[in-house]
Image 1 (cartoon, rainbow, N blue to C red):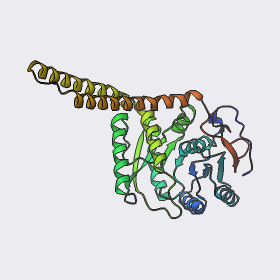
Image 2: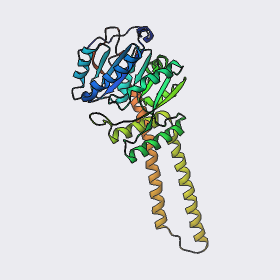
Image 3: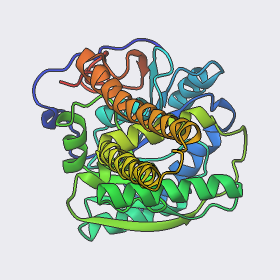
Image 4: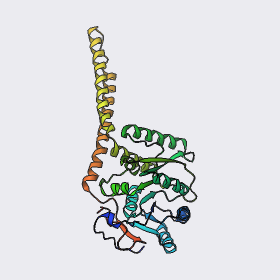
Length: 339
């Protein structure tokens, strides 16, 4: 992609094209093989609705031909635009970059592998016309995932729903956001450790849900590793709830109760003239207390690490180049810091 000017002056509202209805944001990492089919499916659905649109593809540090494929698509259709990040910053940062560049009255965020069905877009737009500011596409069926994955995701969503107060059941990144919500997420939430699924629910306003079934990828394989999913889960938990910190208090209470029981047992044996059973009891007590201490330090460490990342105030992404944007639109800031 050829670098284009990303200068920005004035308030973001002045940059929004009032005639543009739908902005579709597609984060992509090594999706060259299936990107053309995904874009064509989205174009057909939006064309049938007769609305103006733009499709913004964010190349999140791909090392295949994703960048060239975006340029080819832009040459065919000027409504298809591209942002290439300087390296892989992660899906959350790619989504933020795309939303910052979006000029539509609504933005639809979805994956570039067609596991988020474009056929659902008209239904989401109907919900928006009926007054919803946020439309969540929620996963109804995950049979393509293994039993362990489904169980882990279900448990995580349930725990996060209970601790955060938001309904995260079946949550996905397939969402429709009204311009009001886009501006809120982009310009008024400066946090670096972002969890898009949670922030969209946290924003409030009128919200609606549309179910869908997850289908197999047509090409390629999933880009999420077990470690990446675990890291995302930690970000979600530390961003939306302090419940793990309260676990430390609970562990302290459990340790106190255990210590009282052991003390009572030792005193009872001493009063009755029995030998106090010390070695095994002491070993178990030390192991238990040591485990609780290490768990507590780990929980505190996770929160401190997030604070450390926020205090450094590094940009969430860096734009290397763009294509399809004119000089007065596109990414608001090459370094991802907003206005």
